[in-house]
Image (cartoon, rainbow, N blue to C red):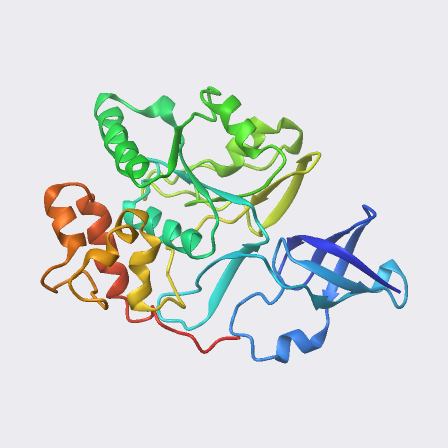
Length: 312
C-alpha cells in the first residue's frame, strides 16, 4: 500500500510524515536516495510531499518518492564545501528574525538570505525582535535599517516576544500560509512562535554572556500545524548563510533596487563593480541604493564558491 503525505520533521535518519488523511508516520528513507549522486546534506527535507510505502503496515513506513518542489530555501553547508543544505521546501513565505544585539544580526547575513529568497520567489518579511531591549541609539539604528529595506520593497516589523508588542499583526501575517522562520540562534524564533501559538510550548534558549551568541534550542527543522491551513516551519539557528549555485552575472537580479536599473548600464554584462557607465554605481553615489547593500553585493559576487552548478 502506498500513501501520500508531507514531511513535518527530519532528524537526519527518521522522518515524520503526515498523510493526507491526517495519520502521522515515522518513516525511513529508501536506500536509493542516499546513493543517487545528490550533493545536498538532506535528500528529503521538511515540507516535501512524498510517497510512502506501507508494505508491512505503519510500523515499517518507507519514503519511496519525492514530488517536485515548488521552491526551497538553500544554503552552502560549510565555508569550504560544495555541499548544500536545504532548510525547507514548498513554503509560501519566510520570516527572517533579526536582532540588533544579544545576538547581533549583520546586514550581510540579512542580504544573503534575501538574495536566496528572491531567487526562489519566496516573499520575506524582516522581523526585528527584542524591541523591549532597545535604547535611544538602538531605535535610531533600527529606523535606519527599516528605511533601507522598505526602500527595497521589503516589509519590516519590530516586535517583542517578551512583551507581545507587534505580535497581533505578525500572527495575521502567518495565518493560512506555510511560513518559514529563520535567523541566528538566540534571536527568539521559538519565543515568537510560543507567543503567537502558546499551545506549542517550544523550548527556548539563552544567550551566552561571553560570546553574545545564542545557544541552539531547535535541533532539527520541523513544521508545526498551528491552526487550520497554518503551518510554521521552525529551523535551527544559522550561524552563517553561504550562497551557492548562483551565476555571478545574475546576482544583481536578486537585489530589487538594482534589478530595475540593469538595462540602463553601458555594458550588458556589467558586474556593477568596476565598469564605466554603470547605473548601479551611480545610484549608490546618489544615495538611492544603500551603501551597505552595495557592499554586501560586492562581497557576494567575490565569493569563490558562488558558482557551483554540478549538483543534482
